[in-house]
Image 1 (cartoon, rainbow, N blue to C red):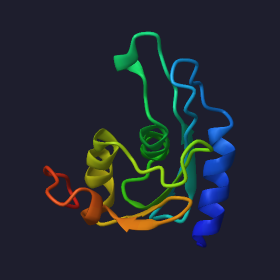
Image 2: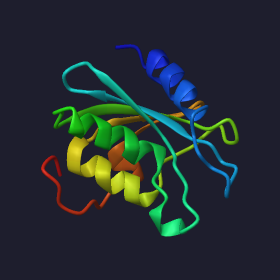
Image 3: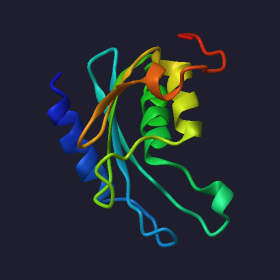
Length: 124
């Protein structure tokens, strides 16, 4: 699958973000090993610890659909060209993705570049 399509879906997902506190919408689209894609957006909460990132929402949607391995993720925010995942999202990727591709508007990374010393995970 072309990563351009993943980025387009991430852009569309960012438009659905619920971010009244940060005003920082993010959309993500993951590509599963099956070839299917799953999208997510960030969802904030007044109790900030309950906020969930777009990337984790997309991964969790894939897992809920029966997927077990993520090949790539595209991440988009209209507020930041190189919108890389937070540490929590990187660790979730390690659990389900191995050395997956992480695509932003301007760059591509391998997970190992962004999380060189990951903790556990099946694909570690």
